[in-house]
Image 1 (tube, rainbow, N blue to C red):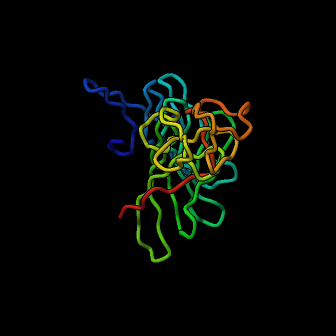
Image 2 (image 1 turned 180 degrees about the horizontal axis):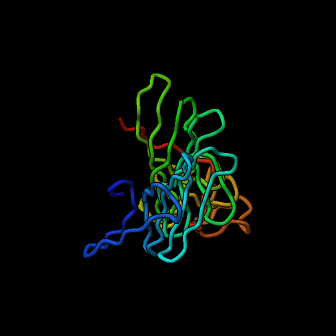
Image 3 (image 1 turned 90 degrees about the vertical axis):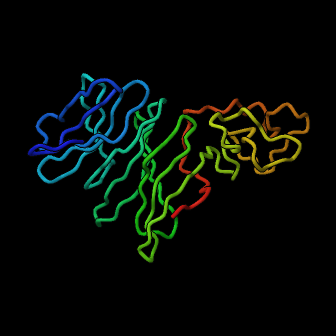
Length: 220
């Protein structure tokens, strides 16, 4: 954002700046953009902060249901958005929005506050949380669609399914069946597709994001 008498959003493509303001807003803040130049952020109106997306032609207001404030902080190339919202008790939480209709809260357990500030094409999240001693930490969280403890992109290569778990291995490899929980990654025929109801196992879909996450490493 930049400021004159009020905050305004901007996009810089490496050559030129494009400025914008949410219609009727007192302040506009842009936080993230994807490869399709869809921008997400927050605007203020009457003392209330709302999330928004902007495709260069149309602004869309996006608020976490029941929240008193929403801030969108990132969007990946699949259109999945992340950010934070404030509940009616004044507590802030992270969340994920699939870009269509589904909102999923995201909180690091045992903390005062969580926000999600980044998401890549395979659903890996980055953000921060405040612990109960009021110390802030960063985190990286890997997408685990079926919640079995094996991340969709377990080798953190940036591509889910490029290194599926085989031979009983469950570490540093990708979930071989992201739609059905199979924590042992059982795959006796070693075809890279888990045998836990194999017909229901598909090649990992990078657009899928779940509330089940595996926190990889807090960083101070």
